[in-house]
Length: 217
Image (cartoon, rainbow, N blue to C red; front, top):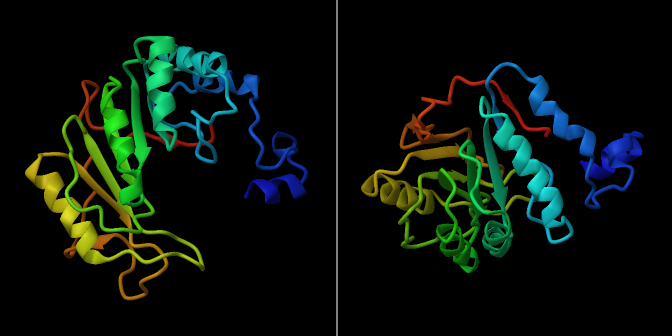
């Protein structure tokens, strides 16, 4: 997508998929009057090693100054979460932080997530390409599961998803099943056991499902 936008002449993607920081974008959340659910960096990773903590701190300051919005950050760089907390201090109260865990080798990220203290800790088990087995869900507030999309998508098995869902229920953790993805043509959409699972954590601000959503910040 980044290369496509570069080819189309988009100024912000003139470097393709290289890390770039556009400081003028920091003003965008402040111009949105309606309380919204904001997914930060949908095409990147806020805790990428090439992004200095000074810049991440600027983004955190904007999040803190816009308490009307609820922000979500997802990363694969779980070690940097710990490092940044030591650098920055207390996370904004309107920020949820999650880690991606696609296979057993990545389960260490869950332990890293437990070492930081945002309002909400969540897991994005997407694309799920492995049986994760028993998961230590202590301190986890939300679980998202989904299969991989695209023509070369890797398989997701129903028993893997059911095992995670059952652990979520046992631990009283909201469970959100996003999609089966593109591999299994017999399993389409987001029905699991004949129903949709779209649970979300309830914060002090109430249910977030009805909020407008934007993810280009």
